[in-house]
Structure formats: structure tokens, C-alpha cells
Length: 111
Image (cartoon, rainbow, N blue to C red):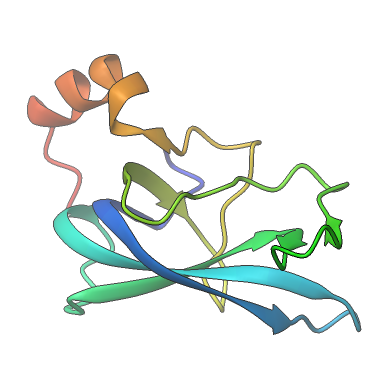
């Protein structure tokens, strides 16, 4: 958790494919913030990028261990960087799989 300056609970409300600084593309997901534990951004919506993309036409690239958000689902998000990003290398997960993390967060003050 120390390596993630932003930690929050949010619902994925939209996605788009955006260019990255390496000449490729990645997915940017808009997440409506429900609760923030760390990195008070003051924003109602936080945008998080993940490596890889899927344009819905069968053209996709997910070879880099990127995390896949599904619009409409809720997540506990561990993010860092500028722009904010997450991956499979950090404990970002769906709320359904986050019982232990949510329990731990409910008993600790990270700010």
C-alpha cells in the first residue's frame, strides 16, 4: 500500500482508448469515487490508465499485465503516477474479491 499514493473505492463509469507516451495505446477508465483512503484528490471522478486496450472489434492488445476494469463494476483501486495508473502488480481488485482489503482499510487511517 505504501507504493500507491492514491487508494480509493469507485465505480467504473466509462472507458476510452488513449495514446501513451511510448507511442502505443492504453485504456483510461473513469471511476466515480465512493470513498477515498489515501491521496485526497478532491475529485468526484478519478481517471486511471491501464496497459492494454480493447476496441470491441477484435483488435486488442493486453500483453503487458494491465488490469481490466468493467464499466458498471466497483473496485478498490491502488494507483500511482501521472497520469494515474494501475496494473495486475498491485492489489487493485473488484469489490467482490476485496473483503480482506476492505476489512483492513476499515480499521486503519491512511491519511
